[in-house]
Image (tube, rainbow, N blue to C red; front, side, top):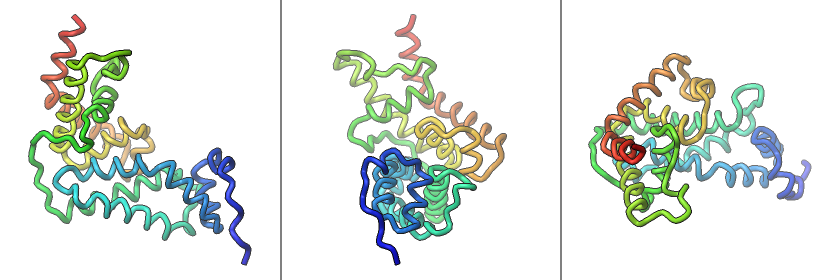
Amino acid sequence: MLAPPAANPTLHDTMPDDQLMLAYADGDTTAFNALYARHESALFRFVRRLLGVRLAAEVDEVFQDTWMRIIAARGSFSPQGATWRTWAFTIAHNLAMDRLRLSGREVAFYAHDEDGDGLEAAQLFSRGLLRDGATASDAAHPSAEELAFWRAAGRRLLACLDELPDDQRAAFLLHHEDGFTVEALAETLEVGFETVRSRLRYGLKKLRGCMERYLSVLERRRV
């Protein structure tokens, strides 16, 4: 049996995800390390926000299960099917949704700040709900008042996301936070294009209603 190829960080940094997975399946463990480093944060954040506060204690387990499934399926991955990223997020989505169904989750609305700083969530707020996408981070020297506003808006959005039906929350997060196209969403969520569009449309409408107070403040600032 051939030994795994020597590590080549520069090569791995430039290799597409699909090629990294194929290299890992051939025994190159450093290719897996590159994949993990590239997607760890996005996958963890997606699982955490999809499960919400009620199942926060189960985020680590679902996240680890996702990577264990990826490892176990390394021999069956095919770049002729979904891209590696779509394939990996599909695994994470299905595991998280299974956990939500088993939990009999009842959604409760209350403010929370999973990151200890609502500014991260404020970026999602700006991308998903605002037309101009402006946030406090765009200003060279945001005032304390501006920072407080965006932190509060971010915390509010996390709470509003917790109110959404699970399928609408998954669609919103994948589209607005992780940049999935409607086509990739349909593949990941295993539903039709129109269903994806419907979930995005209704989810966005609910979030806008939930975030009305903050959206109104921003509208007044533009006048």
